[in-house]
Image (tube, rainbow, N blue to C red; front, side, top):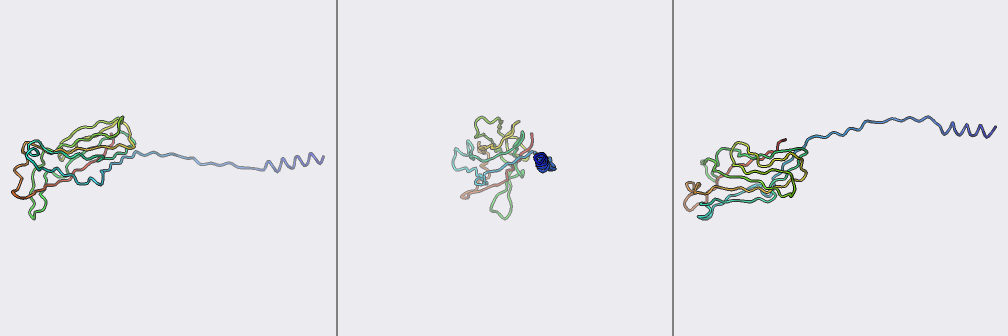
Length: 175
C-alpha cells in the first residue's frame, strides 16, 4: 500500500498545474524606397575647352552616380530645379535659358531587370530608370551631355571663364 501511496504522491507532485500563454507575433512590411547620389559627385561640370567641344558638345560620365533600394517596382525621375541657369560670381545675376543637356542612366548590375532611358533636362520630370521588380543594390552610372553646334558660344566672355549653374533634382517613385 505504501508503494501505491508513494506512486500516487509522486504522480500528483509531478502533475502540478501548469498554464500556457502566448502572444501573437506580427510581421509588418512597409514599402521602402531609397535613392542616393554619390556624395563625391555632388557637382558635375560640363567644361568646354576646344573648338571640337563647342562643335560636338561635351559629356561627363559619373560612375556609380545613383544608388537605388526599393522593395517594389520603381521609377527614378530627373528634372532641373530652375528654368534658367544662373551665372556665378556676379553681383547682378545673369541668366540663360536651359540648354539641351541630356542625361542618361546605365545599370552597372548585369542581369538586373531594369529599363534605362535618356532624357533632356528641363523643369519637367523625365523618367530615366524604371523597373517592375524590387532592387536591393541598384547602382547606375549617369552620363551628362552638353550641347554642341556652337549653342553656347554667345555666352563666352573674352579672357574670362564663365560658369552657369542650376540644380539637378532626382526622385524615386513607386511604379
